[in-house]
Length: 249
Image (cartoon, rainbow, N blue to C red; front, top):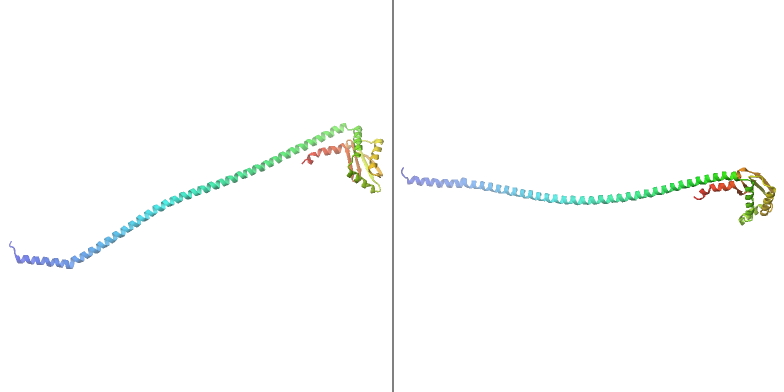
């Protein structure tokens, strides 16, 4: 094969023309496309990096928020426990106060019930004592006991309070004073005279004396002077004995 310089020169010329054409018509547009593609890729990478950084920031923020929320939850839980404990203590204190108040009420009620039971027992004992004493006195009573009671009454006339004497003196203004003397047994004339003398000394004009008998008196006298009633008999004493419990309340 022979070397042809003209052909070689033409080939070089064609090659240079091809390079010029490629550079002019193809290489610059390709470089521009590559540059745009590279810019797009760089922008995409930058956006991806930005998204990644934002995601990392969000993750970090979420973790921080989660830590803060955990701390807030623990703090709120502590506050709630303290409030519950304080409320429990308050309720327990109130319950203790209510129980103490109920105990005091129950104690007062029990004391009152015991007092009532004791009072009823005392009243019953006094009633039984009065009933027993009445039975004994009814069996032991007689004219002799009545005479002693009358003697005691006559002595008592000498010791009447001044107020009683003034009240009896007020009866003097009456035209007539009716005096009823009731005894359990018939009164001897001598005892009647003594009673009339004593009453006459207290009342200037005891005009009328009446006498009656009442076995319920057991022994002794009941003297009715107008609105006045003088008792010196066992029935009245036993009735007063039975009412001692009521008077002690």
